[in-house]
Structure formats: structure tokens, C-alpha cells
Length: 185
Image 1 (tube, rainbow, N blue to C red):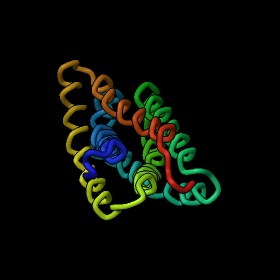
Image 2: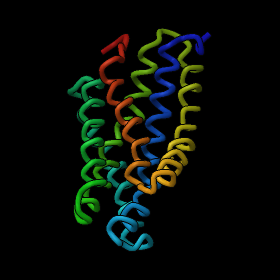
Image 3: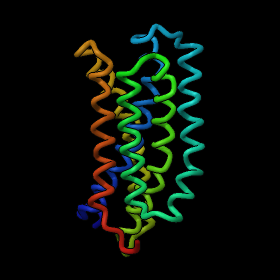
């Protein structure tokens, strides 16, 4: 019954998009910094990935505070837009800029899982347990996005082209902020 519901499918894609975004960026950082800026992937690359995860964690605190005073759809739009801008700066800026911008992507990703999950459950009046299980299977997005980034990068010879996958997932998440219709604001 739930699989026939368009809302269920759209939010499942949203969770898959989020996990794909998170993994697609995290898995590309070190290689990107080596390939485009000549930075050591074992030291500088690993440190930047570590900072990405740290900022993803720290961003949760600000996100929690913002969700107390702002509509979750607005927070999702602001943070997904921030992630898009940060990713663009990371991919097209200088080495020093990329070292800051990649962790900022993590910061902006921090609220997405919980906001998408909450909006999803708040969009159906019943079957929350089953719906939550369907949403959790959306982690499959993490196993799809990174290989797609790699395939596109290999075909084109340009990792930036491969990162188009991450832009697609981020724009989908951004769109959720517009079309989500929670039962309770």
C-alpha cells in the first residue's frame, strides 16, 4: 500500500539523495584535492575529510536551534542552498578555498537527514513504522552516488563532471523544501 503512495516514493528518493550526497562528497574530497591542487591525499586530504565529518556533526547543533524558531522546510532550503554554494566554491576555487569549502559542505548537510525524515513522517497520517523502514532503506543512495560520480569522472576524464551527480541530489533535496506538505508545521 505504501509503495503506491507518491509521497512515500518521493521521500524515499530524498533520503537516498541525501546519503548519496554525503557519500559522494566525502569519497571525492581527497582525490579531488590531489588531482586538482596537488595536495597529499594521506595527510591534507584525510584531514579535510575529517573536517567534513566534524562540521557535519557540529552543524547539527545550529540546525537544532534553527528548527526551534524556523519552519523545517525553510531550514532545508537554506542549508541545501548553502551546500550547493559551498560545493561550487570547493570545486572551482583555489586550494585554500577548497580546504574550507569542503568541510562547509558537511556543515550544510548536517540537518538534511533529520529534516527530510521528519517531513516524510509528518506527511502521512498513519503507517509511520513501515514508512520509517522504507525511508531507512534509502541509505542505498550512498552505494549508488559514489560509483556514478566515478563512472562520469572516468568517462569524461574530469572529476568535476562526475560531481554533477552530487548537484542533482542536492537540487532534489532543495526542491523538497518547496513541495513537502507536512500535516503539522
